[in-house]
Image (cartoon, rainbow, N blue to C red):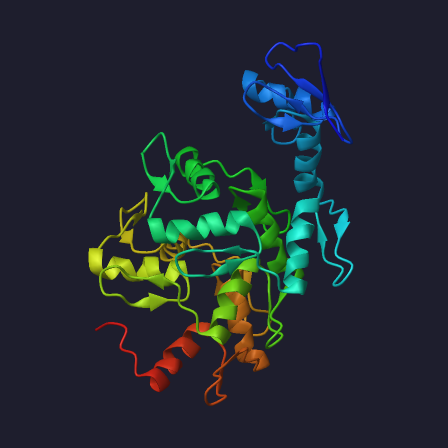
Length: 333
């Protein structure tokens, strides 16, 4: 079918072209093509105007559809449900990506190491592990990041703003997503399950890390000593051995730490607040996670099992130490 082209009325920022075929396409001067309904929304990307504002967190958007999608973060609405496992999502695109976990299809492949991914964004993030690119830069301290989400989280460290508060224990978080994960510690909900050993996790990234204990994959390599790690966080902790860097500083006594978690635990030594108490022996803890680990002493629960000799442990770090008896690894050499 030949295409018959007719000029349409010109909007303020874009000249568009109506193409008479099965679908009406509109193209602006920048080369972007879209349907007529999306053209007005697209034009706002040229003007920079974000006219649709969230009443909850005041974040602004170019078009009302983006605002509606954003509001689901606050309402918890997840209208898109997987027909296979019944897991729900707040965006249709997230459901499409999830469905690939059932089919096993990973269409996006890294040219450097041939690792495959279910979506393009995960591949782009992965490529930065090869290139070292850190395109997201903090305007305040010039620290750079590989991902935009990491930069957004970092910016709040300058403002100290933690707007999302848990109604159960009053703990506050920089991001609503962090609060949502935290709520799982109160409800006990563990939505992410390993299909190999059926162990479940509160967070998807914990499941991803866990899966490497089955595959043996260690994608994070130290440039200095070439030691490989299953998790990026373990590599970052290891790098401090070489650099001696202690970037986490207590504002009260100026004591420094190599990792953020020891700093968080240390801060409680200034307040001496231990708000989580064991109902059995009345021992108190700074953090709910510490209480949860302690309770296993009373219940006898041992969640962490060595796949070599089947010995089980109360804590994951005890299992890690034990595994070295099989591998002969000397971590501090």
